[in-house]
Image (cartoon, rainbow, N blue to C red):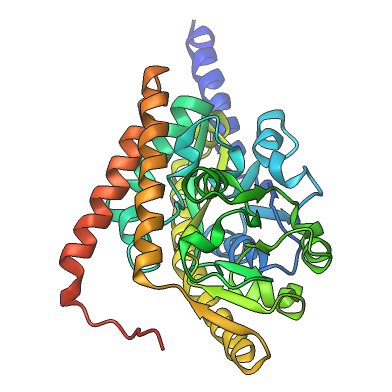
Length: 357
């Protein structure tokens, strides 16, 4: 009789031991990225994140960082997570394209949140929560903000750009919703060209102007060597953030303490990356200012016209999505624009060490 009573207890103990042993096992996560190993998107985001995760978990979780194109083509990193080629993907939501306009609004938006306001909105204005909820609802993925960066260069151009009228008819390389805004709002001819082909296209004048990234990345690729004009600031991408995504079921199966440590690692990386990239940009800008390029600073009139056209694009996209049953673009756009307007109204009490020369 005692033996029969003991059997269930032994079985339960065995299950508990197995579960505990499973939690104690080390976890290896393969991360798909969008850039070469030496790009800031890896040196300042993916690699530091992997290091923070290893340290915070006492080596129990190892993130293996694969440079862009190894696990999947850079525009297919989300699909790589879905089909199991990668455990994590890190990149900009804009790489998901415009089928759901939410992805073109939530992490970077033309004339949207700037370097000063993006992080407060993400962590204290509802951005992170909406992104996590959206990914769970629409993609069955779990998402955290991972990495952020400052304004891009607006354009390296063969022609001067000082007013929005200068954009008319211009062959302008870009991606995402900025391409639609350029075309519909300002009469430009946007062209989608892979980053690997940009130097050659600009050199052969296959494009009149192009945007790609921040000063440090653009300078490293040599665009200033073949186009006379450098146009700033990058109102098409005033600030930006990346996200890391995993399958929700895989994330949910992780121990809670490991989840929390990964979350902390992602947040720490985001704060660090924004400022480390800014310092690299400063060094690049000092060199660019000594060069032969003419640097043009866009005025408030230009920026305000871009803001009007960009918000119109978002409002139109939200109306269309709502008619199709997708309320997310309207929700996210309202959150971003309300936060931006409130920031503009209340932030003048803060001292800013910034002035265009």
